[in-house]
Image (cartoon, rainbow, N blue to C red; front, side, top):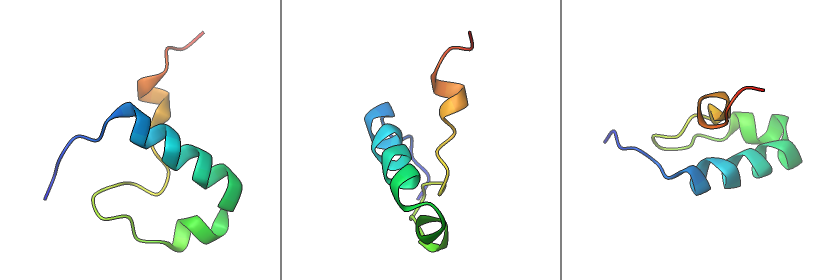
Length: 45
């Protein structure tokens, strides 16, 4: 089931990713990439 996730979800996942690193990579997030594409969500400076 493909669906758009709110930015808050990506931010939460990104925090989780930064804390858990390799362990999180092995986790299977249903429909969510293990590394949230935050580059698309935040403006480039």
